[in-house]
Length: 255
Image 1 (cartoon, rainbow, N blue to C red):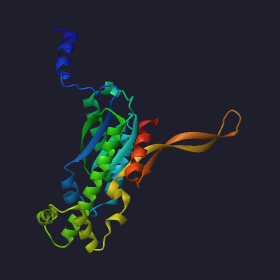
Image 2: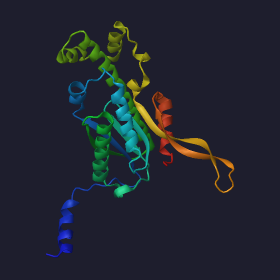
Image 3: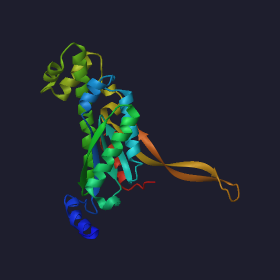
Image 4: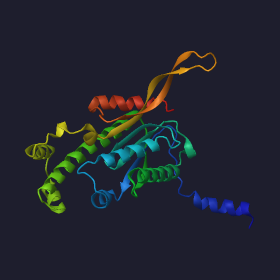
């Protein structure tokens, strides 16, 4: 069989599972650490419930993904997850989901492993969204989920410090309301509202315009140049202000 015929025959099977994100839809990629519970609780000696080295490794991984060849206007990371908002007109690899998933998961795994010095693996999923409001809702959802998880984590580890086992601490938190968990922390001298914003709401990354001075090589005159700079926001705003931040990203131009 000639190669051309063999190639055409086998391409049908290779491309059988290809799924494309339709033009006009927003693309969001969400990455999650695979087996990170074991990584953070058994393999690494981390500060509980939040560790600066781990946080910084996640930020560096998000930065890397935003500079990995795709047009990404907003990156968000909280705990062991990363969410990326693509430019609406991004057309890399014909918007094939399998290409986006495999490349992003590989890039994230490699950069995180390098940043933290231990093997860390990510999975990835593609979430197509049809309109601006759903994009805003998505990131509000992830931000609010981060807040609930942070509250639960602080309560869990304070119970562990009292000598409770993992199962005992988990069981004691079952069915507790947000108010009850806040009260649990207050009883041990912690006001949840006073905790760092990055722990409660995660970290946002986006491009902003920065003006710098330079010298025109033609006439040696000093000129002002506007450039895009990746900003890491450690104190994300709440509610409506956060909506505004996300909506601005929808029309933002990537470098």
